[in-house]
Length: 64
Image (cartoon, rainbow, N blue to C red):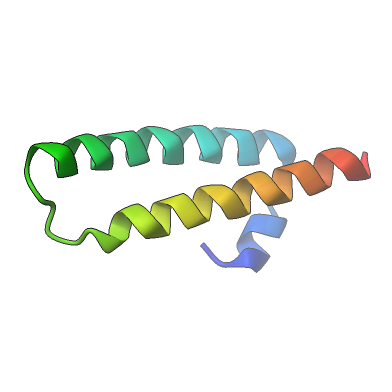
């Protein structure tokens, strides 16, 4: 997701997206622990997306 797409989301959409990304990250980590996944960069991208989503969520909460 691009930052402009993240900024367009509402608070509830951000929370929902964070929850889905965290569960996806857990699945990636479990799969990688069992056997190496094809593209381990997915883990890094997922972590960074979660961080960007949480940052935007916090900014919107402080703005209100």
